[in-house]
Length: 316
Image (cartoon, rainbow, N blue to C red; front, side, top):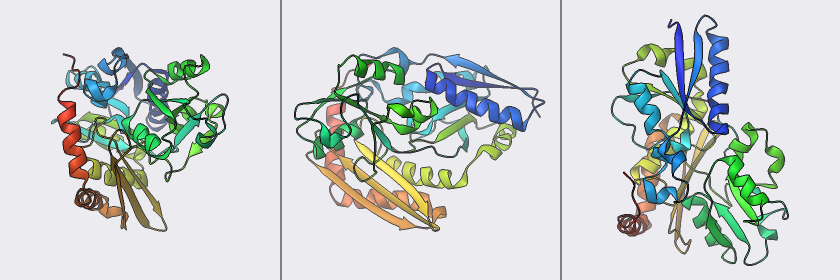
């Protein structure tokens, strides 16, 4: 049993909440071990004037944390699973995936009760191409504009009337005690969630089997099976925040139902599919669903996105 475990985390309010949540859990499990938090600022936190799809994706939120793990300054890192790239870098492993919070998207507005209530021309803010493509497909009369920053920053911009409404992950709002700001929760049929949305992942170096073993009480099997299916689908499609895609799995009565879609950013083309099967076969189902989407024409959308991404802004 180690005498000390250091948790690396981003320094946003939500990231710190997540790290402290894991810290409290580990403290209760291992009271003889000192659990501390190392707060860090990542490239994703520093670049706020450009969409993530143009600067390298959500992986920018975890590179500095992985460097701290590699250098031994931290033992584990806590991430939102939707921020974890589909391919883990060599030498790193997911030690555990915690039980999922509400995976849905949340509609937040000070004046309107739902997306349907927004007048034509209303400005809706979102940080993701996934949400943007679904909004443009279902509500073409609305204006969708980029929205970056932490949860508090996004809410402030809404309160300053820069947007008529914004779309955020329900899990983040609930974890921060801000569920009262949610005007409506969006069903998966209306806004299919992001891969891994609502789940927390604990990362460590792959050469630390001792830590992986210690994290097992935090591992939630049903959530992990769903997230594995979602990530397998996204991985097979080359998924990242440069690709407007969603993937959502849920288990009911011993059956895993996996839904996925790929769309053009403007929402004019949207391809969707779903599969059901055994929860332990999630990885195989994810790969199969990706094939089904490709068979319907997803590869054409992905190829067009890849060519446009080469023209995107990049940062050293």
